[in-house]
Length: 459
Ligand SMILES: *Cc1c(COP(=O)(O)O)cnc(C)c1O
Image (cartoon, rainbow, N blue to C red):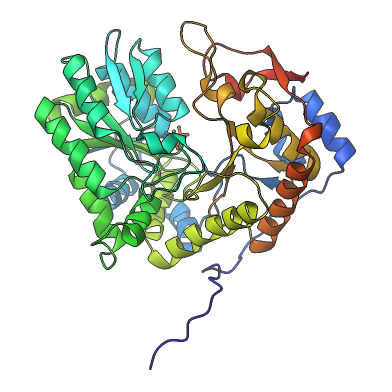
């Protein structure tokens, strides 16, 4: 007999512990936003009703992860928690060396401090903000090489996260000797949470091998990427997600990772790689700033949470729910006529603020304007992924970013369908009244990663 199949894909968990949401009024939100300099990073989290700022470290841990917290071995060196962590990482990513770090950017800083420097060039399908900043902090240049389809928000392509392989080959030819590593980000977060196909990864691998340059993954959303491969790439329908992840790993020489994303932990990360000499140089730097290589800036209990989270991240019942719940939000916004990046990303839905607020030029930050309007309207916190984040260059010049997006990132296992239904109503209301929205200018900003602390004023 066949199992009955229903349309509704339910949350595959029960709620065990809850945190209250504090309701606020529109008038109060207007005041709090002004006091925060129109920068949502500067708000107090308790003044937010639905927090879609990021999916980083904001997920709900499982009972098994909390049990792991109790088991944490806090020995300074050689803690059993480290070995559980290392084995869980190597089970999916069998790289020879695994260096725990307090989060993803610490892995980036260590690696790029060793391989970066003036005159070096690092290509990536699209650098995440901290990745770009860590490349540039060493004096090296970060180059984004997405496929052209990735830059058209309304264009459907199953693997919009793919790298432009011909452009990569040209770059490696022109910059012979200057490229220490090629990066591929899975899924492509800044490019709309879009997946990379295994076919593309194989081609990138082939080019890297031809030019003798190592290939690293920025693996933050490896499980969501593997799910998309399973459902979209011919030949993978019946391959277990964990095996797809191992195949991705087998094409790379190493990875940087934030455990605050797919591994379902609130803190953590790692740098993993095969090259013994490079690993040794990275380890020396790790000891200098992160800690001894068996804890790397993390408590033993954090290592336990990551180890357990890794096995839950590749659970296909969870992934089906995870990807479907993001799609649910995307479909509703699309049906309401809100321009969104399609197909929908794994961890987030990206609204095309440049298209929605066509009356606001990119240098008046339509993404920032939209993010602020969503907060005032319904207390929904989102993040701008556009000209505020990527428009300022190391030489001080400013140009519009490739796209002006607003990311509605979905924390893992945290919000229910009715929370998302509320978000849909809020976004739809703001989109309907969009003509009343005005641009913004920057009042004050630092010269790198300015989106975190800049202050703005409405024009
Ligand atoms: C979050 C993220 C990082 C950085 O990780 P942190 O843990 O925030 O330091 C790097 N790359 C991508 C793609 C990310 O999403």
